[in-house]
Image 1 (tube, rainbow, N blue to C red):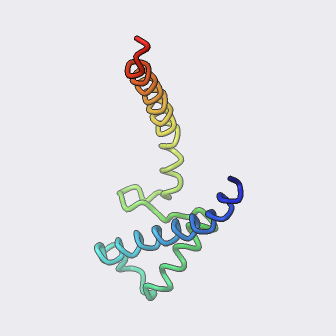
Image 2: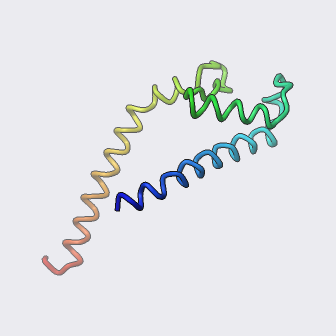
Length: 107
């Protein structure tokens, strides 16, 4: 099992980097007005963004009025997200176990 996970880990990393690059390129193409102040070629800007995102966790600044760092905004919302995740897991377990008990003929 550990061998399979170790073998698949590089592909996970490649997939995450490719999806991040595709998302950045999509925004660059669909919202060019957001990148008007950046005179660099697209390839250079993409490499700089990926380097900042994966090596320094610098996800840029928010496009909303606050212009705060995105990593800071994600950190602010993390506690609420974790509570929602925990609630969903508990709900899923309760509903799943109840369905299993009801469907197995025990009751």
